[in-house]
Length: 268
Image (cartoon, rainbow, N blue to C red; front, side, top):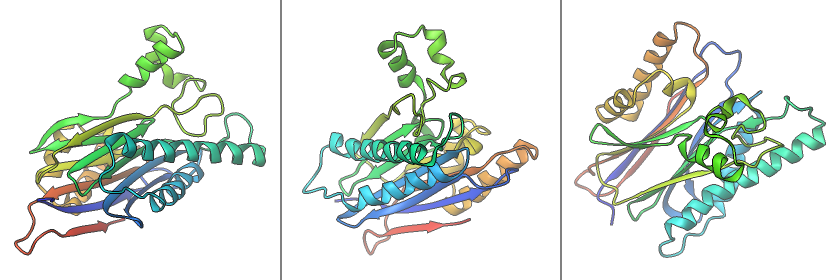
């Protein structure tokens, strides 16, 4: 039985961009009581890719039937299915729409599944990030390290070439890349308790903060308060040159005496 309640929220700011290409959502499972899915996507060359990520995530999660207690690998496969199905649809849309190279819709992905059994599983593709904090300390965050190793082993690339993959469209790890399948990095944690905090963030946010700053901000405030403070500080530090800024904060706190409850909110 869980010994915490969930406080969660999402927030976005357009920055100095002409439009908001990020998308973020918190979902509960239609056939999975007690499960929560948080998804954030950064659309590249428009918002179409990120819109497709959220649409597919809703469909896949609504169809998910966990049973008594699914394995961590099955939960990881749920996230992989969202990525693979989104990637397939984006490629089909590009072909049907006659998109030329360089104009296809691309998108990053970071997703987090929380179970009623005190487990968390996350996956990511691209430059959006997930952080796991505990008592104002960073326990884990996603990075490109595993993807770099994948490029070195599967593509036989020299280490320096693999580390510079962002400069190559051929090697870029995003959904919608017609030349490359997206590589999903998976992480997990069991034994969740009050004090655990998860942050999903687009590069328009995390680029301006250290891990320690994000850990402190999210641990000492409610998701709404932390979101407002981080967006304001990101705008200040970007000096008017910041991009789209989006986040989801999922915080586990001690329950009220009347038992477990969940709260999910959103600010814009």
